[in-house]
Length: 95
Figure (tube, rainbow, N blue to C red):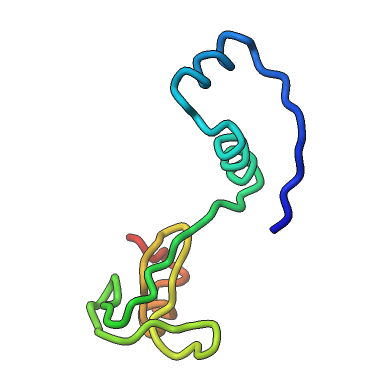
């Protein structure tokens, strides 16, 4: 992803406090913008061997190349099998 320089207007006291603490202001601002746009970064554990959050069935995890297996749900951040996904999709997964 290409990054671009921009400028922000920040209260001087806040700016100095951020510098003193060694805060990466670019990273902080980018994360805030992602959150505002509902485009947060998500890390998905793709290691083999997982259980369905609802029923505990062991299956491998689905991938972009092979959709058979457990499905990753965001923002719940859970792995769920297709049976439970179908069964609970109308009533809410995390209940």
